[in-house]
Image (cartoon, rainbow, N blue to C red; front, side):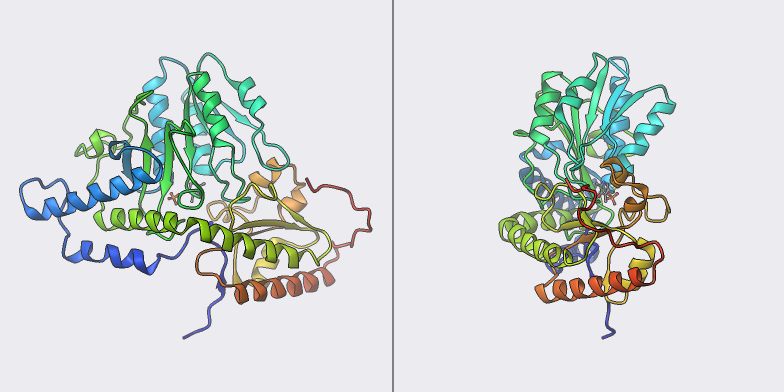
Length: 400
Ligand SMILES: *Cc1c(COP(=O)(O)O)cnc(C)c1O
């Protein structure tokens, strides 16, 4: 087999776990029916599999099966949540609160709503990437209808205090949406304890297939109203029309169930790998950790490396290791990451970042090899870079 680079880009996507693929396969060729065909066994088989998947996913987040609406992924779920709430509640208010470090699949629907006359507050974050609850409290207005704060950041892995945010929203009677694309099956999520009203999920960041996700929509205390964004056959209680994609739905639920089964051991294993990588890379001078050191996804390490261009660095590393400087969705743009700028990184350090996403199939020898390669590549690039001047201690203290 041709040698391929070590994959450390698990925030962009993950491979499908072979156990997930196995569960999906019969639903392509054998049980291929349309779940909406109510008159024969092909339809019933698909419907039964989907009901089971819905129950598995609901249980994973302490919801009920009726509260799960399948979508094509987290982008669609975020759009449905934000635009769907805006359209259903605009007579009550037109103010939405979100955070500067959100994924573009949250920021762009918010910007779109501004063109329709909604007002959006984009809250800043602290230097560690966490939202300050006092800022949220202060931003609440009588006409606020929705707060959208992500569970886990896709660049710096920071985990927002969902339960505190949920409590704040509930006390103001404002709906709380969270984009949990990076969090599902990685950290515990409980829509009851965290008082979450809407939650976006996707399968492909958690060893499930691409093209499938879900929106959790609370049906009690309070019952969330949502204006559909896709109209048609009336599937998913009219909230999201379109023939349900049985194999992907089965794969999604299988992936989430497997992830939760293994969450304790995997969290520990990934944290150990991440810490060992960070420990080794600190041999390099002028390298900075982005985001809170502990309150982050176990497989996430995000660093700014002074004096190197991250594109040159990624190119130098790519024969050995596949990783990104930041979000895959914004990687095509040459602008420095909006997340790193929001945590106060200079444009230079924001443009010189490396995002390591360690996953289920990475091994300790792979991480050792990556550490050695990263050190050698940075040292060599700095040696030829006129921009790099080693800083003398004491260094300007920008670590949090
Ligand atoms: C990947 C990602 C998305 C987009 O999810 P898709 O299922 O690919 O549409 C949205 N939000 C966050 C935080 C993500 O990491």
